[in-house]
Length: 156
Length: 156
DNA sequence: CCCCGACTGGGCAGTCTGTACAGCCAAAGA
DNA sequence: TCTTTGGCTGTACAGACTGCCCAGTCGGGG
View 1 (cartoon, chains in turn blue, red, cyan, purple):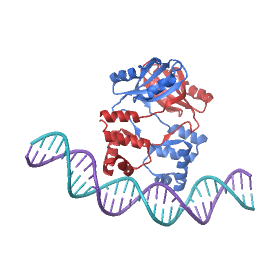
View 2 (tube, helix red, strand yellow):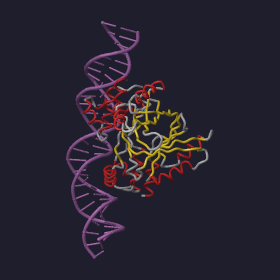
View 3 (cartoon, chains in turn yellow, green, purple, blue):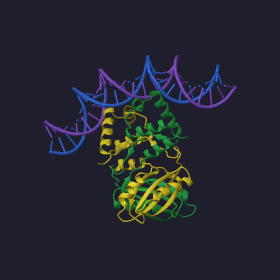
């Protein structure tokens, strides 16, 4: 289940320059093309690489406001709340957590004013007892995996 | 800056089946290949599509534990804290937020025990006054953008 | 000592990409 | 109404890549 050092270099390379193909990658890594192909296949069937879907920027889509909402759920309403939130497009992800809140979700909105509408829609559901929202001002570290991959590659 | 309806269908298609190329996409969408190519180029230069990097699953990498930490920062230490957290591979993303905490970051760890090590490393830095952590138990809605894209496509 | 898995280097057919060009059409402007 | 502009359609061509196959090499485990 670990990650090879070559695997690591491959993933990092693909992350930095996604457009290069298997052939070019093999040249950069200094291995045969078949090797890269085999590694890639294995990484994908392993589940290490889920896919190569487009990374969409909500801000460029017209949703420049991001927020995190901590939700407190009425006992036994978990499934319903999940289904409800799943139906809200502005809910980009949802986690159930330990701690004071029961759920944490990431929201986007067209503006601060629009965020109110989104929150109303999110919490306008019996089963959600309380919600506290934190608006994101800055994003010093955007979602990244490369450092983790490098670490996993060295240790593995 | 809006999103066309065709743009929306294209993005959704690519998100669902990333391996298909421009040609196949044009067939599916019922438009000419050149059109798809032009749209793709525009979406990428727009910044709507950031890229097609590999989507790596930290769990498969050996980091099955995810947590969110809310950090309280000593006034004026923001920049240092950012730099510090930027150097921790297990910090997958970092936001500065409004509300009770000053920052919110996503962490991963090899196990619950290992999470302690990560948190120690994160908060072991002058400038961080307090941290409260919520461990993720379940992830009912994994990070997604498709519903948002569809909504933006209809409205735009 | 042998076997097995992994990597190498090469080859082949099929397909896709990048690019270009001419024609068509609808919307915007003169 | 005429003209211009921008976007889409088909088409074409050379170059490059992919998927697949195979024989040979190499190092570790049995």
